[in-house]
Image: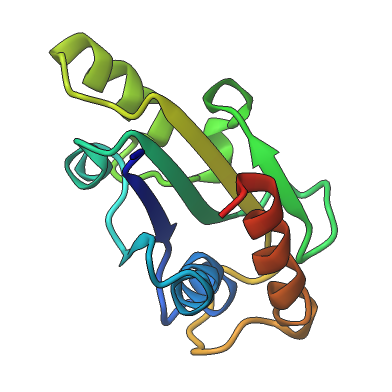
Length: 150
């Protein structure tokens, strides 16, 4: 059986940056048989969290400046723009972390799904998402369940 990890990334006290946490938490309720981790970690630390899983689904906020807040993007590592700060810390983004992981021989997942949710406010302190993002969360959860066949 394929070991699946859902990884919700973000900061639970930075308004819309908590959206990855919120979605992961709802996925955990809907699919308790799947391993779910909510983390504030990013960059190289993500490699430790995902090692050993066959399939990883990463969910984080993204601020492309092109989409409406609450829009769900399904991304590849190659599509992620470093300026979005997607799963990024200290200048090492998720793409660079995976490249290093491959070079170092880490056991990385065979299947990687990456979801970014367009956000409006990821800088101000707040324990709730903005209205535009909040109203899309249930639909995003359902969409990820369908796309990933969870």
